[in-house]
Length: 302
Ligand code: EPU
View 1 (cartoon, helix red, strand yellow):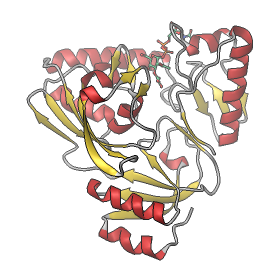
View 2: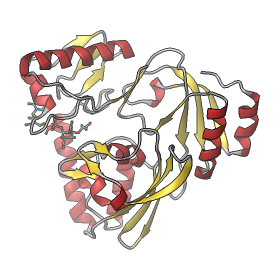
View 3: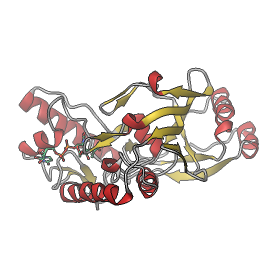
View 4: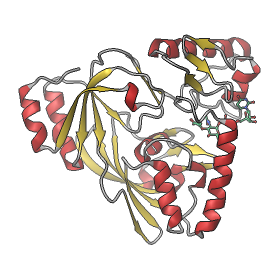
């Protein structure tokens, strides 16, 4: 979508919002799939309520992009604009055992920065790609760690109230790859409380997780991480593997040879290829086990 409403275009500079015209979502997602639209880069969080009112009043549909690492986006000219938070400095501010982190901060860098300051707990999250905001929304987890365990408060734009609010830990529920945030809430910043640990000890934990990840996941290929959530007590990857589906393709969308719950873009996969692959694998699993796998990947495919 190309923004053309003169009222919006005139207001953007006053709100500190930069418009990147004709932005490619294929270049901004880890799957390397997605069409073209205008991207609005938000430099001041407090401008968000006004920006969203402006877009709504003008009937401009929008979506909010985090790190784009757990996302499948449709091809072609996209029917909505995309909003994204610009980096704020410093991305992480420490105060005792608390880390105040902006949502646009890279998760891995945040884990490393905290580690260097002798704050641990998040070692398992080191190789999870994406932003802290995206990790919060999904309650990202790996190797027994989930980010939600360390959250003490979240600053967010609440779409229902059209304003910025701060929620305390008690007001948020974090479950396996699920949180109580509304789909259109926008994460702005988080306060984490992390246990003190010597850097050397944290580093050892980080190395172990990195090694496990390197040996079991296709890190050098374009993917969105795991496509499906694990069914209760099971592993989607093992189930798909047992059905002999590693290497199964639709166009250039392919079930990874290394980990069967990673679907990779092995070249010029389209969104339609990837969607067909998801549907076919889900059907095969359903036919064999009677179980319906739930998507972990977020779809912007309508
Ligand atoms: N397995 C196979 N074949 C495969 C993949 C896995 O047999 O192709 C077996 C493994 O050998 C192991 C079991 O299945 O015995 C579980 O595999 P793994 O340890 O790789 O964990 P997972 O359940 O497949 C989850 C998360 C990952 C996270 C890892 C490590 C989900 C959907 N996935 O994978 O998270 O990195 O544990 O903690 O919960 C993600 O969410 O995008 C993601 C990559």
